[in-house]
Image (cartoon, each protein chain N blue to C red):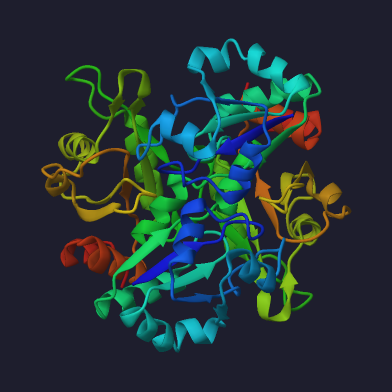
Length: 260
Length: 260
């Protein structure tokens, strides 16, 4: 039996009660933290809180050499953990398919996601978000923002839809793109006057939600990761009020996106 | 203090540990179940499990007469509960704005969402979903599917994006549209050969994920609500494998959506 369990957004208490109870019943616990991580805790704290020993696997250990995980799941009750929800990344669908091929029963226990938190914390309606995108680290000065990212945001804005921008994570190097860096990249390469919303530390007790024009966001410090950036499309009345009243968006910037 | 807490997808154990601990510290607990409900439990079971008394409010009690909730939150620690995540519906953004106007501190504790589960259980990548839509009950024989729903799905498919279709909920009447009804409506009004994926009871221990053409899905019984319907866009290799191997999609239907 292989149970995929999402740890949720922030710390050892972001998991559901169902997930916690399932952890108690497992014989072995594997986890990966290269797709995301729990910024509000440590591996040791998670192990202690749930009274488990976690065998952490890197990308190669999950994607290229998953046999030890599958072998264990054939004879024992095994849990596979990630931050957020375990199945949001295709990697783990691959692991689930390999398990199914071997006749291993699988189960998914969901976790809270950055996707939902981005809508929930900003007040932007979830069904008005278009396709999401990811802002990669520019590896050379000249690289800037990939055209595909701009195309996705533009296609959404043309339809009045919001865009959630995940910010690049290089967990192996401990690099997590911050929202001020993301805002400066978009301001330089595209439109410094565009309204955007920063969500920092979603799921923590003290998340920051800040709405302003890109050039202004680029000069601010939003503290520890993880950060997200949302580019709003058209703003319904309640959405505009939420950005202005709860996230400090300039009224004129909100007006520009509010259909009359 | 007004804390919005998402109960998650299914029963009293779908809430996060953080949410459970916050509930223990609140003086009063309000909830609404008209936007969704926990199908795996009862109000009494939730109250008993968390040792709380829940004051349920209908739509009018939340949208038109929220004063009792806000009055309480001015002097006491108050929790406001919904299934899923509390802020996915604009209604509750309105409640949060009213609280902010009165200087009441607010906080959000996230819950697992149908949106994330639809991606997680089907193996369809979350960042390849376009705008979501909702299939309403047709109130007359002639009504069928609103053009806006078809337009949303079409616009997503043109870009190769998946569409999550929420199914109408009339909680007051206890009416929850089932996926076979949704499939038959789309098959009759649009394209009976279209591949779709049913997700029934997401977040429960025994969710059903079934992929087939609309006319075939229309003849099946997926059991108790809540149900969701996903209309896939283009299928990447791993997504097609997931639908075929884990959800029983016909290979030829998967091939039709797989770019060469």
